[in-house]
Image 1: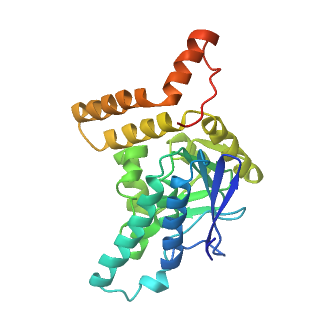
Image 2: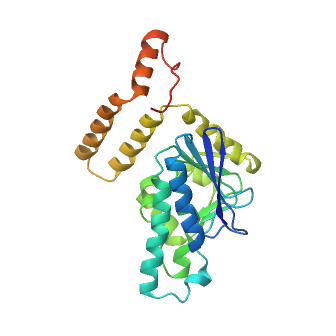
Image 3: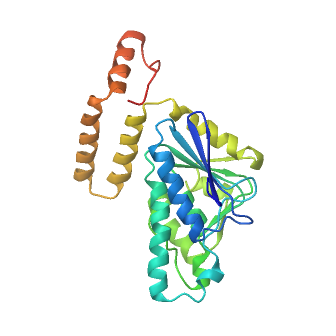
Length: 259
């Protein structure tokens, strides 16, 4: 357990919880602990789904401006690589991941939420990429993951203006997948991923990798990625279990072991 990031497990669901009040700003030590937490839940076979959570009041913000204000170009080449690597480690968790967003998810905080497969937001949540107001641009995925999620025009509006997006608009444009009362965010996120925690872990990992990798390439290459993952699953116990259960008991009754 780190100073700023904790991993808390409840049966098959692990929560990566940020704990650096007041804003969970993604400073260097938190980034390192975040990458370690992503590696921990990735290798733990008992973990089938993951929640990213900043607590009841705030999700996360980017690195402290005071830490970057006097940084040089050479400094930022190193700092930005470290930040991107930490968030990419979260994006590559081979299990369903949901971000439970309360309060603010700004700058690097929104970029962290974009690394999840799904996003649940509280009714008073505010999301945004305000970097342009500092004379810079997002540096940890905001110009890349955001347009892939909401489209280039909407992403440009959010990035060019640096404005805050409220929960209702975020839901309307597909930036979040569910909006609930603030007090229900964590439970809603848990309910969302609980269905996947009972699924075939290897097939879910293959599906996530095929979709994510396919989005970064052309259609023909994406289809080949899909084909190879599909064929590879015929070496798994879950494939045999799932097909046997379907033939004997009908759909939706298989009990998977993740092997």
